[in-house]
Image: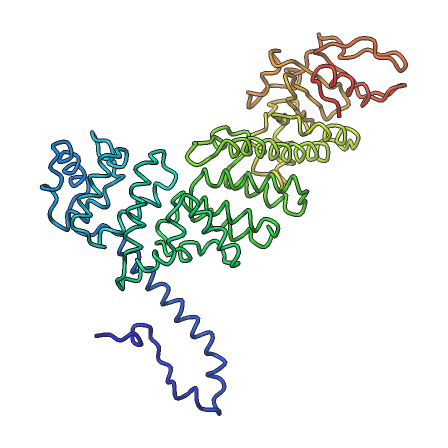
Length: 479
């Protein structure tokens, strides 16, 4: 039989440690011990993974069908008497089988299944049941889950064997016996300053189960405890999200990051959080990417996601406004004016030539998002460009030349530029037949119109004062 020493390749001669003339061995000992400790952990993880595999040649689908049919005939105990079938059955609780409802969805079927396992109980049945508890932690079928969890907890409490996997679960029973178990897991890891990427090791759960939503709840609890030191823990939690691979978990968690960054004015983290959000969740203009699938999201989570999406859109709007007025026209006054309205912009777009697109794309901040928000002018564009902002029911267009500013209501034909990828010339979005947006005399604005144009000219009133007056009247926004 291979010894533990041989298995670990542990070739250190213990007598060498006693030699005072060889201090080099002592200096290298911590590194070597860490190496072999890591190997031990891997061996333990491999053993746990094997126990959670439904080994054997039996078809789980056939076993599930056999059980469901036996339950209908009330002959479950007579039908399942072989231990290998009983072990296979323990893995069938949530198995989808065409033409049949999964066993887990029937509280009565679950009770019958637990009864037949209990009649000839073996701890080889345990992994399949425990796996179901984790997998269905947030299930709508609460009664089925509660029955299985109570059964599993009772068997853990009774266990007095030597199987390291089950001993590990028993030692960590507090993480699984109640609804708040996952929260306890996250809180304890944060208190112990454990990296969250070690969550499966810390809880003795096979790493292959890291995609379960059980660990999402643990992550949220962990985050609440460490968010005061967010920069220190951010990389670790994002690494977990990458391994976990669940979009809704990422959506909820990244929304928390965005809101914290905005509320606490973490300007040094904002570019990083913005890039993370755009990489993991995508552009806030893409409805599908920000859609909630309602697997684990609470009502508060849903509100936070909507709020985070609006904040991210504001961040992007500010960057696009700054980029437009820096690259397309050097006009600090117009830039500062429109930045004040960025939080009220629901959608934006840039219109310009291929040369304009190239110049804007040279900016690394927004290079990836220019194409999705760009409308190409086919001829006569030169280096001119237009910035389109949607505020309320109004489409506002700023041009890079010294011409007029235009405003349309959404039902105006020229507002359809929001849906276009190209147009022939800028004249297609300038309705010169409309009146001025505002008429003034001295310090008095005596007439306004909901649609039309307005020039950036100063008089007794600055053009900013006139624009602000018009925006307040027709959008209700006063900044």
